[in-house]
Structures are given as C-alpha cells and as structure tokens.
Length: 240
Image (tube, rainbow, N blue to C red):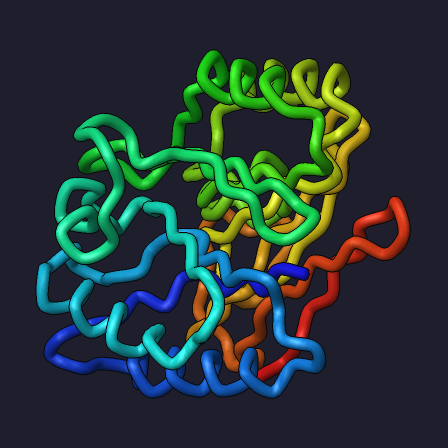
C-alpha cells in the first residue's frame, strides 16, 4: 500500500497555512491501518524552490517511519531538491523504487522556468521493460485532460500523451499512473491504464468545466492511497 501526497507548496515565509496543512496530512497518513509501505510525494514540494523550504518539507515528513519518495513539480528545482532529498547523479530527478509488492517508477516531468511538463519516455520505456512487477508510474503532470482549460494548458502536450498511451498499452504490469499538479482529484484512462490526479494537501482548484483559466476553491485537502488487492490495484481518495 502506498500513500500519495501532492502539491504541498510549502512557503517560507509561511503563507496560506502550507506547512500546517502538510503536517496534518502526515498525521492523517499515520492514522491509516495498516500503515502504508511507502509514501510518495508527487511534486511541488516547495513554492519557490528555496533550500529553506525543502529543509522544512523534510522536517515535516520526518515523523513518517516508512520510506518517503519524492519527485519534482513545476515549482521545484531538481538540483536544490537533491541537497535535502539526495539522489545519485545530476540529471533528471527520476528513479525506480520497490515499495512492498509494488514498484514505483518516478518520472521527472519538470521543465525549468515553465509550468507545462515533458516526460522522458525513452527512459520510462527502458525502466518498464526491465521489471514486470506490478507498477505505479508516478509523475507530477497528469497525462489526462480535466476539462479545466487553464490546467489542461499546463499539462503534458498531446503528442506525449499519445506516445505514453502506446507505451502503457504495451505494459500491462503498469496498474496506475499517479500524478498531481491540478490540485484536485481527477480520474481517466490512458492506453487502458487508470490515471489518478491526487488533490493537494492544502489548496484545491474549483471544478469549472469548460473555463479558460482556473481558480482556487474551498474544497477540503486530501491524499490518495493505492492498495494492491489480490491482483487488482484500487485507488482511494482520503480527505484530511
């Protein structure tokens, strides 16, 4: 079982209760029975990619006794992240990790100075070919359209979604694509694989289908739980 937190956007100086919200999310994970095998944080850890913000995020995640795996979002700086969440190498912040019975393949979809995303699909294809364990592909930018124009404009480009669909259709051991970025729960299917966008641990976007932009609303924060039940993966959204 994997708990997924996303988009805490921890700010220093503190704004919008981001640190307190992440602390409440961590406390909610610790109340799960049983505890998850790992916690995955799908990007936008920090608002300004400052070292002191990453240090605060690490401090807030410290109470979690299980492995914590992070990946960068469009607000993050992978190099700055490495100082507080070490990862070998100095290229894209991406890797694979075994989490109980599930394998997580974490993709770096961040693009420096941009809000939209791009995935290294050649790297992902090689990682998926290397191991047939039931797998969650994790990334910040969800490869789905939400219908909220301002969010869809800063997602993965259509050509990448199309290529990823083909890769997923050839990779039946991938049971879910888990993402964040859109600050609300959203679900879709790509290449026959379920895609879940996890809500933020703090601020959520309004559900406004067909709009050109997006607005912050007052929906409650939440996180996702992905559990292998027999041979099926079920994904829950848990309000905080």
